[in-house]
Length: 393
Image 1 (cartoon, rainbow, N blue to C red):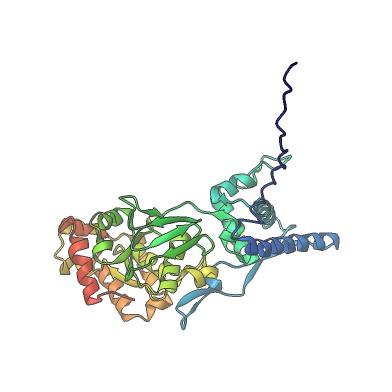
Image 2 (cartoon, helix red, strand yellow):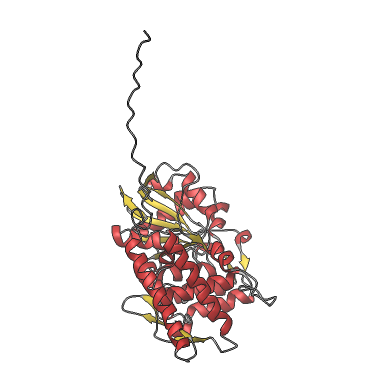
């Protein structure tokens, strides 16, 4: 008789649970997303209500210009005033920008709903198309698109990060600090020659700090100078955090500096070129900028110091004629404008500094110190200035 075979009883697996949408489970911006989405809805409803009631649809946008920017002397920052510009649908001079504003609003709404982000470049292409029945495109270039996105920030009362839009990474950091970036722990003491790339979004929901044992932050203007300081391990021997902004620092870099200064009481000391553009970079780090005055509260560092390079250094450091870069008409005009900034106008030290540069007739880059020695800036110039507290503020 054939042997009876028994089949192994199998247990039916329960169907896998659908993953929880990021917007509900993992999104650190969930509470901010709700507020931004409500602001977008209110903007859209205002336009719809006007149209349905027979009134011309319009949008009021805060004015981002020098005329609507005020310097708060007691707080040491630039702040935006109350003036607004009205964008009307039936005004030929405003209809295009009105349409672009709604177009980007819709794109931002999509990003929030999907729990995703996009770059400034991505938003340009997301809204780019040829208007039906014409040869006209919605945006001529990215600059036009970026301006509308900045207008939306102030109109909605939201940060660019809350619009789910980020900018290109530009800026580097190394030193005595550990960064938690989107859950990943990054020890900035062990970043080799490349350093940690400072991201566009540096809000507490994304970036946290750990093991901060530095005494100060040294911010240099360019990567070429940063490389010298990193190679010479300046941050290690002088117990600091070393950052660079690749010229005019991005919002991400400025936000990182601001948070470290505010949350960990780290002085911010700047090593920038001796020219009107280096002076302007310092001004932006210290007081904020006109175009982003609405963000000064989270970007400006009124206590930031300007260590150098200074107009007096040509003689004080016995530099050669080779380092001189003649001031042109554009440089001179810009220097005179900066002298009139209210935070520089009443500052005797800054008035002397800019006048000395103009009387010299030339500007200098930090790299000019290399003519003394390849490591003169890291081993002599900066250490001596720090010890003497020889800086402008």
